[in-house]
Image (cartoon, rainbow over all chains, first blue to last red; front, side, top):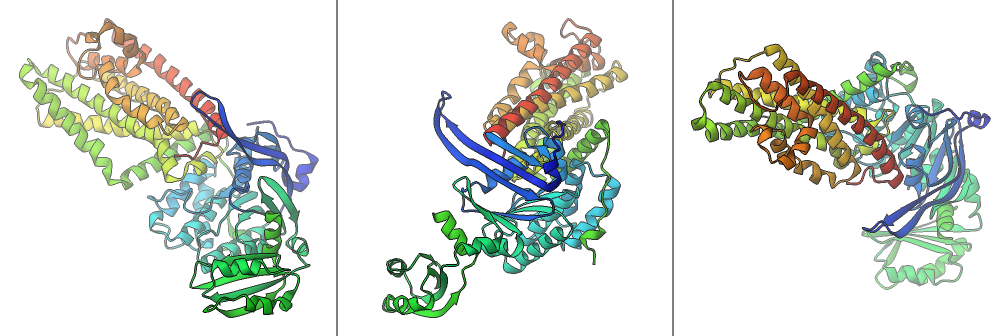
Length: 332
Length: 280
């Protein structure tokens, strides 16, 4: 075990990251460097003890790299990171004993054995006293709603059940700090709501939580502070309400349309005073989100641009959300 | 309704030895569960040894002049089965985590990966022992091989030591697979050369002299010699005694273990530096 690096700071901060960098180097057969990619370009942030902190950003922004470094699975190229006052380079095992990790998706479980087998295995790896584990595992399974299904093989579980088992696995050794890496990805709305309720319970228990997510409403709903990461840099870090204040100058028009195409989206983008248009054209009914400082005054132009045969089913004028702030931040 | 507040807390297992024993037990437990969850286990453990033995008997039956030669064959086939199972299962034990998506979760545990791998390798080698026992039973029951051991105590001791030496060699092989997904190719290609170099089917002394240094570096070579000395009356193999074979085997086993633990540490650090842990 490495030497503890407890400082006065660690009394306040569960996570303290300073100038953290990570580069990936691709080498050719002869060992020569062919390409260097910067996944993290010097990020700084702190998470207070007991805080629920969100890290949001587009794919490839550096969220997973950050989590891997903070959970000691990847070595940083530069900078420092302290977890509960311990150094991620030196104090690997002590950090691992005190943190829990929830991986998103299908990773991280042994599917051919039961939920109880998975939890027993991981509780042993984390050094939990077998007597404590024997009491703790059934209760954990009850909390995550898997009681009665605990003796089935995990391969028979739905995605939501697997995700709940992930949470039980992360809690089996009673960690102080929990990393949740996109815990609701791919879940149906009810499953995602259950997971969010569990996250709230954990927060109420005084656990420190770092949550990464693609869902802005989730970050807005759960997190006390949010860091926005883009191209390996933290581009904003504040409370959700303060981040939303960055886009107070705009309103949002949400449209539900039928028959809208990419040409319509381009036509909307060409209207003066339209700041940004985000569209999902995949479904039979399309959803289009228009950011504008004009508010409802823009609607006549929006309707006028509609091509023949297309129609607007529903329209709503809204206050900007965290998603609008996020879009501005990551596109700047 | 249970809430998070009701969860029992605290108490971890203290002490270096207790922690490692707990991890070994957990690793053996999980490997056993995963092994029996996959119905394919009958192929390496029942079908393959049966075929090994059958081929060996049909090859040599007409040439044999007594039951001790048949026992020689049975022991050789058994060790082939043990080695085959060990190399295949151990080399893939950590590789399994790669393609199963559990590599990160395993590595995130507060314990060196080498201890988790050791538990898996121990179970796999034990499974190889059962494989060898099965071959012996086939030999005794079907081919009426006489099982009159020269020194049963020494036979037992040599068998246990050979089991441990195979485990340590399997652990060493595991580090190769951890380093690269191409490691599977290397470890799989070790299977047949080791059959030959350790003398499972014929005395190692018959090998061309250029191969002998490789054969002598393999601890199972000495294990097989010790087992044969303890089992076969009038056995003539290498010019070493039973105890000399045992000492060399133990020394080489310890060297494998030391090297495996050292390599695990280096490989883990390398993989973490390069971000290649979960790639498959």
